[in-house]
Amino acid sequence: KNEVEQSPQNLTAQEGEFITINCSYSVGISALHWLQQHPGGGIVSLFMLSSGKKKHGRLIATINIQEKHSSLHITASHPRDSAVYICAVRSGNEKLTFGTGTRLTIIP
Amino acid sequence: DTAVSQTPKYLVTQMGNDKSIKCEQNLGHDTMYWYKQDSKKFLKIMFSYNNKELIINETVPNRFSPKSPDKAHLNLHINSLELGDSAVYFCASSHTGLPYEQYFGPGTRLTVT
Image (spheres, helix red, strand yellow):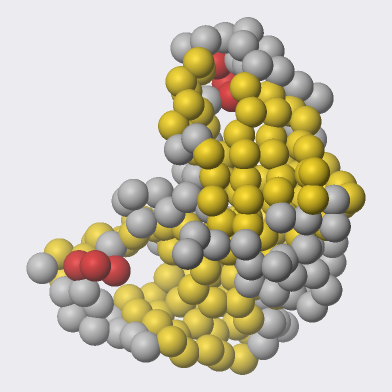
């Protein structure tokens, strides 16, 4: 069993829908990262959070430390949001442990 | 300006060869990382260097040797390449200390034939 589990593995939605991707982890962490990997392969950091909630544009990330759970939400989804979204947790020695990713496809 | 750059972007080579992948960051970060992404797109840490010192060394064959000539560079040398080494290798960098965001390079797709 991975230390970091994501769900769903694949998600297809219509443009405009509200998207939720979940991440659960089983280890103590100092921070949790949400990353986006586009079909071209590049990886971009979306959020890093250790408590509460962060918002960038249409993206919202939340974390519940007690429940060891984080969610990434996308409002008013758009085809350009189609990508793989990866949750990663940071432990005390700077090491990142990654989830298996959620492949999101937004259909126009 | 490219923040984290890697060369080459693509590398095709035969089994048994030795190859290197270079990484450079111009962000003033003092920690750099190498990650491997396998065919199932799963990312895994390989190495991390802080101020040219190795701080993370996961269970990686000793055919892989990272080298950090200075804080801005972390190169990955691979000896005696095997088919299973085929993957995409990502370099990343960050500040040290409090959790900081990591900035990723564009990746190097290594294909061993």
